[in-house]
Length: 377
Image 1 (cartoon, helix red, strand yellow):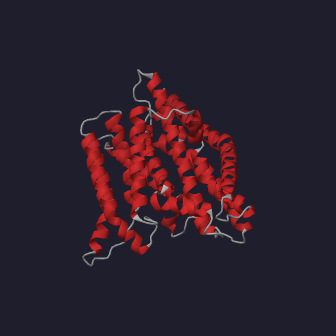
Image 2 (cartoon, one colour):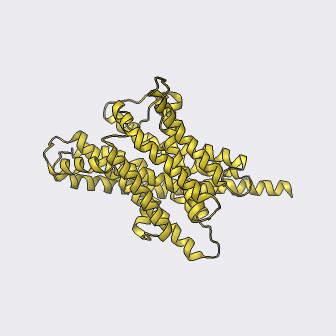
Image 3 (tube, rainbow, N blue to C red):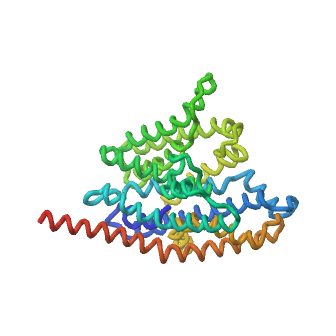
């Protein structure tokens, strides 16, 4: 979800600067679309859960939307494909894993910690005090590892990203990260780690079911599609198709299981989730092949996408506390106001925290490189 990954990683064709620049604009624009989709889905969800009038126009639109299409899952899957397409190719240069860890830390954690602080303040204002263990666990982006909940349910994808970074670093260290056959087999194994425990339950064997690995497999699908469409590596196309087939079969089969136990993977029905995955894949493929959209507004939103992701829920808490959702047409104006506040917060956070922290990380890396060069000299 990080716009700043793109300049250093998506340029493959060194002899075609125009093509590289277009792809940069294109990837950022995709991030902008994904961020807006997540905001819209959460807004509709807020209307459904909080509106006082279930006969109003806004409530009807929100209910119809989530019944046929999950815009939030569309945005999340699009983000996953983009991260898989971009992030692994930022592991490069001298001492690449060290550089990768530093750049990821400065890119993600400072803005996240600010969002957690703001969430804490908002919770206190509503009479709720998050516990210190919960806050500290959230700071790691893997609170479940410490048996703590997310302070905001919207942040669950950060755990997926962190897991992807760790796995990719391991694959890189083993020399496997850019080998299509191994990545395809690894992605299929990740899907199986979700599917097998569900399948075994039909034979009376109870095992814990998790969806983390299935989600991570879509980031590696993004990597395989990069190898297929851009790098044109041998076996990448076959690997991509195999992973897609396995993912499709599993998605078709786990829907009823998820709905029966209401675990949140399938929220309303199978149709909106399946449509969202299909739409995200199609939009991603068309965009990569055509270098569209090349829109400066969407590209700017893409640059802000991480801040939008972190702060749109906080903006909604602020706005909806003053203007409660009713389910009527007025909610659309309230939603527009919430989006405006989100964008203002995102611009401030991006310009005065994200970019300075990213640059600080780069300066730290360059300083270490210079120190090592002096020692070796």
